[in-house]
Amino acid sequence: MAWRFVAYRAVKFGPLINFNQRGFLSCLSQKHIATRLKHDLAFSSINKNFLMVTKKLPDQTICPPSDSKPLVVMFPWLLARQKHVKKYYDIYISRGYDVLSVSITPWQFFWPLSGSQVVAERLIDYLNKCSRDKLVIHGFSVGAYLWGECLVKFNADLPKYSDLITRIKGQVFDSSADITETSKGLPQAMFPRNPFLRSTMEKYVNYHLRAFYDTATQHYLRASQLYHTTPVRAPALVFVSQNDPIGSIIANTKAKESWESMGMKVHWKCWEKSRHVSHLMLHRDEYISTLNLFLDEIEANHVNNLKDKISQ
Image (tube, rainbow, N blue to C red; front, side, top):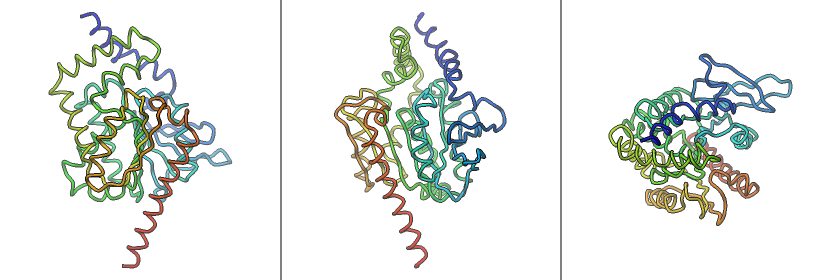
């Protein structure tokens, strides 16, 4: 069918070209590590999917990543623009964190065996080798799926990753989208201002889920399962709204209830009206105060745990 061809071309070429032109991944397309400065942040590409964000010093020099600093592993929404994600970087950088931003392309999402799962494996290897003793996860929309792929890797060899899992002190999820919302979320992310291509992509996503069960759909389902039954039991903060059709309150409530049944502490911030991955923009003061209170809590827990170890 013609719509399949249009959707295929859009996934393979169109959005990726526009995405690079918008600038978010332009610095990641280089073969070797490159650094550029913007405002008070320094950006260093590690590979095509990893972007390290650190503070820029007053004398315009770069403050290099430091193993003594806590690290936020951020999973932006699909095709996120840097000017939007930067607002979240700023919050963490101002608190003394470094940020590792991990993104995937639509193509990597559609073909997890050679795409998102490869990215997840590289991320886990990177984190497993780094010596930072405090990690925080912050995922948006489909970024929660990518984190789910990481959890699948964890679950396959828990003894190997036990130390890494214990270094994760907190988890933040904003507008998390489950597999059930894929056909709505992906087209909206790729073509927010083009109804024709959005409708075409929605048809393709539904077709893709039916036609490629072995190479795609079953992996989405497995990642969703591990997201709900996570081996990472660190406290979680969930941002959601009642009117979000993509990161639905129903799907997020199921995750919350599953986590709480395993003994996890879950903080819940739900707005009656908001917009998918736009809670910070629409409810800035509430969002920042809620996030800061959560970070204060997990930082205090971390300090208390260190004191307990010293006193033993």
